[in-house]
Length: 322
Image (tube, rainbow, N blue to C red):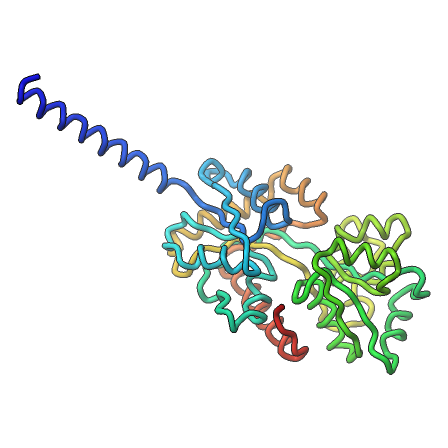
């Protein structure tokens, strides 16, 4: 090979390498990472993968990335520190965006100011139940039971979760004396509830409804303002007389703070439209969830209101993160 040919060969190799590098960079830039701050298989993960698969033009670009740990803080920090270019998104929920920042403020848990709310992506309600052996049959019986001189215990699947704080808000509104028993997961709590080791429990409706339907647990009320699809026979706390009471566990998509509207709006629209597709609606129904495709400022107002509500409930209840 002559010197001239050798120089041409080297130049061609360099050009090919540059083209390959550029192609990889473009492919990487065209990928949208959807961070789930919990392990695979949970509700947040299911919602993320379901919506990602039906997010219109975004669907082929989305890669779901599970970053669990530190009550969700690891995943949240990964998104909060990313460029606001639409290529790194978060599936957050009532816990990560509105509750945990107050419970773990001393650990530097990311607050709502470091995120751009894009789209609300669904809600489910919580359900208060009792063991049939208590003799409590309805709300009136429960209210009488809770007004006794001795504090009554109630259980949920975690400390500081949506079910726990739903009941804490009720306790504050009703001025009851009650002690919370926090389990490490809904499964162990429900097992003890079914066995009668605890008398009163609260969790997301889908986890408890099968036991209600077979008569193993007695339903008292759902925490949402409206009766829930699939459980229309169960009254709401609001209709039972608890004024201005409306609590749902919600999910949403967020980006880093500072996303320009030209980037944020198409992404928000894609996730809102995904909730209107039949596969998503059917899967949500199976999960006991409902679509609620709020976007932009409307969703931001929900997040701010929830952040303030749970800050006040946590402060009044003296609740600390575990």
